[in-house]
Length: 433
Image (cartoon, rainbow, N blue to C red; front, top):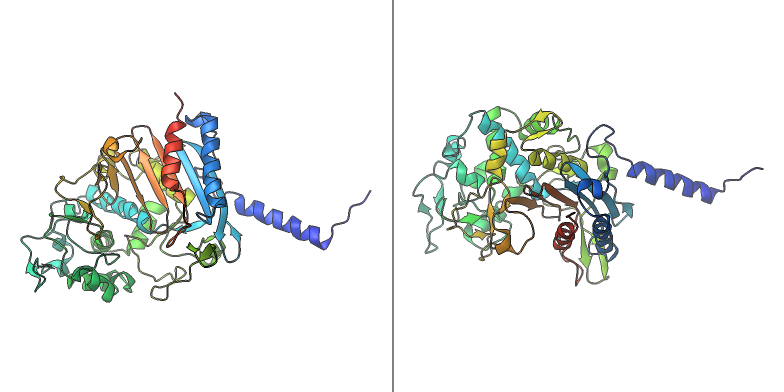
């Protein structure tokens, strides 16, 4: 008996093989590979089935084009799945190996780099920032009457830089003179960190040092300080001292040519077509394919689910993974402890306070009072997210982490689910007794 393969069936066969190759892990020897199962990781099987179904429903409803999600507990992976599309225009599937703009999830990575140098005694929390950035010696602060900027009462410290209380603006929001200057001077579109620092030095602070919390350019400034302390480019330091030791070989400030097919694009809800649409590349910023783009410690990294999970598990393990120690436990404790005194409202430049029970550690947020925040998470849960929807949290009390990777920015489908809250609530309902 013979069989005949038609051109159509051959195309289907090739497509199936291609899909299998896309879905296969690229990391043959590097945790995490796949889930060990719900019960082995400390959750009920029904609960994890419900979690996976909820995430797939969010994709099916076009709340997001595609997603990769991972849940870990006690060093075991309960679920690691992908669904939907990485790119709307060419219908490329989202896979476990897709690459993402993680934007502000770069911040905790920068914080780890800074803490590595703190452990070496190269800086101290009470040092003035100007010790490492002399250009900031003559910083001014916005005056309360809107006239000429005032002098500082004192120099902002490294502690304040790490906790977003130094007073710097960002330019992402706010209609005050400082944030307008960030936008007008295109600080975030600077060609390199040196140019960025020169621009920041001429823009007044939002408030006197230590008086207020503002989401700020502080983590990008930290990347520049890494360069001053090490004599290395920021990206080179991260690669040699953090990414290579942790086997995070997908994580960098640009996408290499061979990895372009894995790169997910950002999408938004188009009300005119009543469907998801893919965002065009920004003309005012260098392409993510440009290896010389700004090495932004506040929002410039590209990463994969595998890589960021390894970074998270290193933090869960108090600074160590697979026998490689990146930080001492004390450094992780400092990073994940609320450093705000209570007088500083967490304000994102839009006039309102932050959420109750939430504060800031080193380059990431800390949930110090879950009851006040209305969350089932344990006290001391720390977290952050990126502008295109990537997010993570680590609950050290219950030894749980959650990582979700999407690329969505701008308008959302009317009635779209709050995927973060949906996942969080199911996760805690699914814990084994």
